[in-house]
Length: 444
Image (cartoon, rainbow, N blue to C red; front, side, top):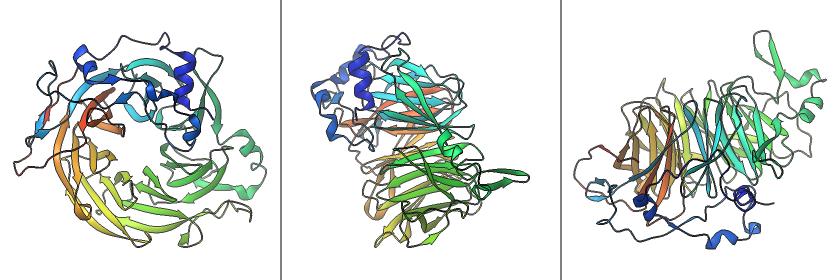
């Protein structure tokens, strides 16, 4: 299957009429060395179930003495972040971000989805208007899945005949799924007083999505976690997961973590071990895929909501961001059937709204408009090594690229100020005993 970013690049070439002039100045562009040598990499080496890799940026030595008007900010005597650009164009608050090769996808409460092209960060195209406020998005192969406030998931695909580039392929639950279940009364569940829906339907806004091993996971304010098969878009399972809204999802090697306003992060695994809590109204046949069962519960502070959850690359560490500004971390023990609390830090003065992780670096976005930079130390503890400032509103979403750029990587942040900010962060941060001071980064 041809990858989404390669279809857009090689078929459509330059941005469409929605393009704007380059947003990076000469000094910022000189920092990034453009290379397309790796663009011919065979798509067969890339899995449809994995995020596409970016081939646009290649490492370039950093000359700190000759970086023009955009110097690096120093935190504790070490190299720190650098602001590269501010992207504007959304009608509402930026709610989610996703990377797709050379492209950055962003969505907003204003119902619009924008595709930005790197490295100049031009607006490539815009789609999705009028389909309900977008809460989350993920990319799988040549498809984009978007979760909406109207309780549906929409599936988009690159069009080979239209200048709009993206066209709506289907909506989940699909019509085929509906027709196969609506006649049977046992397929209906009560969502609230005097209201019944099919178990394949979400009864409230879908707040988060995750993709793993050919499955899409959706979490909703209706307290349920649903499992969908990517190949045919069929809903396989509905789990009564929490006592309050689900705000975040993370998946790794067969384990799915759901963060909820009930103050818990729950771990779900495939197989028969553990306590199965699948909705009894969606019986699966013996030929159905394994169901998910509850493997563990990570308890947060009393009466505090978990807004986000992330998992380390090796699956050993799980971190959750809370509405009280704390970040809590757990270490999985044995075969990850039990966890122990290893980290509990006051990360922000206001709620932690989003988190992401690259190697040993953890980033936390907050309602206090800042982004915290943390280093994961021995035994999973977090040490604060920097602060990124610049947003004029709460930071709602974070996305980092693992591609090496000048000894660092790109960090993207979206906020309620309707902007997306692009930062460069060095891969290695050096700690110091000096106190941390929050500094505003320079922006273009």
